[in-house]
Image (cartoon, rainbow, N blue to C red; front, side):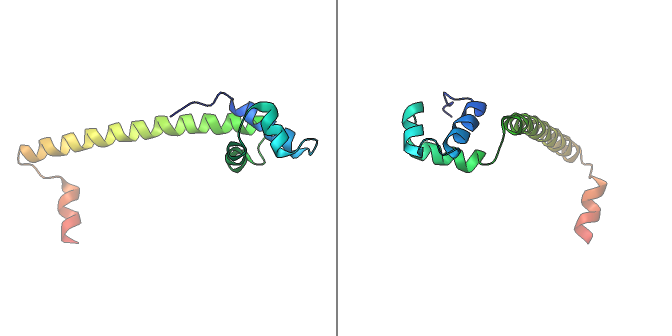
Length: 101
């Protein structure tokens, strides 16, 4: 995915500048060299946020990505152990209980 030339903090400052009402949205976009559709996409994503909120959001997204990766790795390990046990002719206790219910 293409990375924006503006950081999240810069985006929030541009949105706050446009919300003050000193310049119109089109003038603000022209001043910073971006299109109006981009402005409205940013507004939908960052509306009402402060720079501290954006930093926290980025931190949470990073943490979420790490947790998703750990979960995927654990699932692969569980599948590998299950297939090994099945190959050796063993059944897992939780599988036999779940099918009779």
